[in-house]
Length: 386
Image (cartoon, rainbow, N blue to C red; front, top):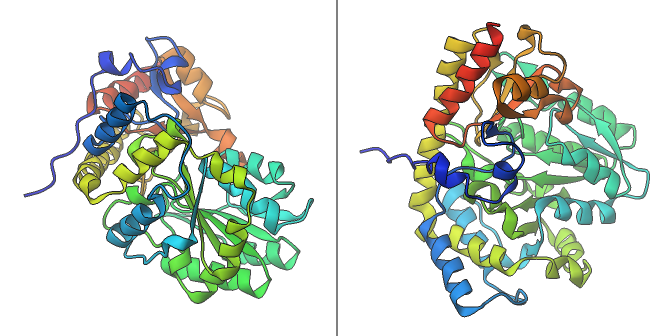
């Protein structure tokens, strides 16, 4: 018997939420832009947060809240990755962790490789850390995207000092292969560079794809790498502010332990409480149900586009609930999202923000009810026929 998919909450209940997804646009706009999902929280999270509120447990995060141990257990169960809790530190969110690490592994003005199309804050974080973005776009193939390892090698030989990796990739949903990750680690080791791997979407990998943590790939990867991650995307906890930084080897662990104390103090207590509950075995069944729902949604989008936007190009993501869709055939301009929002009343993420490779693209959040996704694509189809 298969896992029963999780059911999204009804729209009238969702519209009572006060988060960005539900407060950015009028009620006649279907919001499928920001990476928030429409499902109920895992029961263990609701229980942990409710207990904290009832106790008035709203103070500072303690030195050892059990987060590192919870992540180590989760990584072992879900990824087969053995993590030493002593290698794990915390901070406010993933991008803050990226900035703090980059500030200490590059000098001002040094270049950092990013692989567009990629999460827009990557560009800002490199600059915030004092670096310069070195673009090495993903290589497009008929069946998906891969790292351009030759391009990364050229960038490192030319002096780039770090690689900011997104695995699984946002927005394409690409789960990088073990072989490609090992090759990236070798390149970084050969050139004395560092790899910072954002793995926030890892728990959302869909079968038959298999997620491989970068630090687990090889001794070389551990010697050059950092992982930055969070329960926030999988369990819809972005507002609670808690992220993890993991060092692959002793040198990286020393660097993380040497970060200013304020980096750790930025971790929100509610984020810790929710994160520990999310990564406990008690929440595994909920996560399996979420994956079943998202698997259904990514296939539904394929069918809806074939019916209502047949000239759109879309490859089902290996991971996550974000769909990267090329709608350039419809003549809605280099940035189609504003027109779609204005004329179809559907809010999608702006493709060009992910890099110039996003011209003519939109990113669609499918982490919603089937009927919401259906209505959104039907509205876009009506716009295409005008």
